[in-house]
Image (cartoon, rainbow, N blue to C red; front, side, top):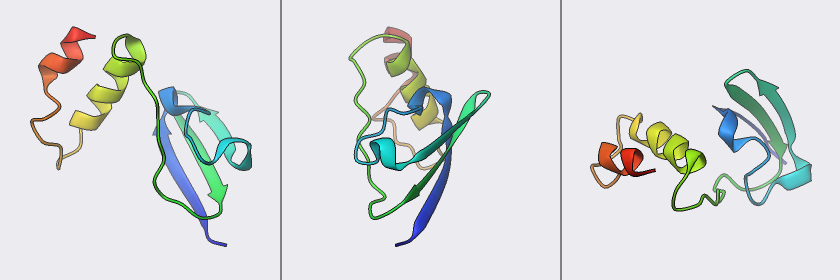
Length: 79
């Protein structure tokens, strides 16, 4: 099986679906390194409709160059 490694913002720490205890999670300051051996590259991160986690996720998503205006800065401010 292939092994995947991600460097994610710390708010994802041990919160991704599908990999759970099978992954190796290493907190590294504001990020976490996740190593997983197995299938799957798509995971679900459940976040509430308000609060700090939502604001963090939206801020992170809009930082990608391919992000669309569907996630706007105003959505981040609402949280």
